[in-house]
Length: 441
Ligand SMILES: *Cc1c(COP(=O)(O)O)cnc(C)c1O
Image (cartoon, rainbow, N blue to C red; front, side, top):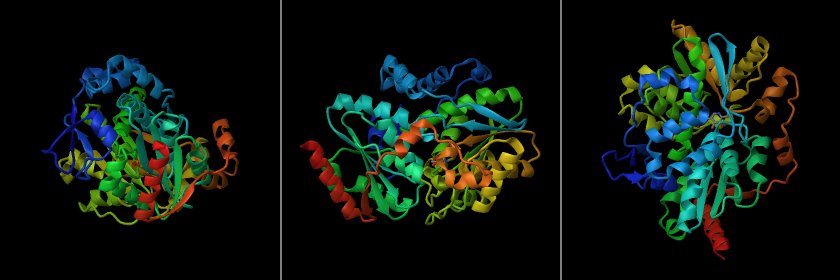
């Protein structure tokens, strides 16, 4: 299968290998698959009989990934990438939380990062060159990517994060690892970090001297494995015999885009709900038809503090820029921090379930959706992170201290190794050039 750029759908296409290793097309668009094949309705009737790995295999086959990676290696890679499950936990007969946080770094991004690291490791190993991964993070991406690539030979990772804008525990997860992982603490916002990374990819000199790639949700390799858990969720939700609505707490909209891919593959999804905090660019677009990025606003659901959601280009492409078509599949709601806090308390009191701020925004959106639509549907709220990742927000609201899982406890005791950086491209570029020298020598 070939991949085109959203900037130029009729233009040059590339293989999966090139799309994954480059991350971004030269024209600054995003890679999209040239076709998305539909699986049969029969397939979806039987999905509850398949294991998670079997489902994933069906998806990668449909995406023809076995053209790029020999099938036995690909199977092994899936086995490695899917070392944890995505259980659907019922809150009530109409509501479930899809717990995507049972991986290494306790957030859904582990799915994408592990799969992508495995793919890249396979290709880099064959090339005998050194690959530099650049990743801007607003919280969880950095840790998932860092853990995914930790110790992978011939690949180094540089994580850029906004100073003071990620939680202490998030920060520890990607600043304490050492080895092939470097963390840059940027005096600026997430948008600054993202801009620096984008600028690096467009810089001729850097690209001549170094082999650069991205690992943000803009990389298509992150999105493919996220389709897996929509299938997994559907297989579990089917028993309710209701139309299924997916509620996706969103920032850069990679997670939601993966859901739209699942729908394109024929999965019988009634609708999607895009749930955001005050960074409501996409809900506002769904109302007005105007896509108006703006600087991000800090909130307690900080992994969704994105003022210019990059995957919107893919969403627009999937619907050929037709707002009315998109509105049929997608509804958007936005909430502020006070509402989010109230939702955390409500979910705890009503269901004795501890939800963290991102999931709580999803919960609010599901309530609003139900109030606005008379359909008797089953809502799957994507539980994007474990509550232990956001103790500052969660613990005072539920009046208890959450026990720290052992894998986090170990990291908390290690020193932070990050390097401070101004939000300045020349400084960033110099850092990268120096890094490339150290690695070559
Ligand atoms: C990254 C993240 C999100 C947003 O996901 P996108 O794919 O960027 O929309 C939501 N919640 C948590 C906990 C995250 O880490």
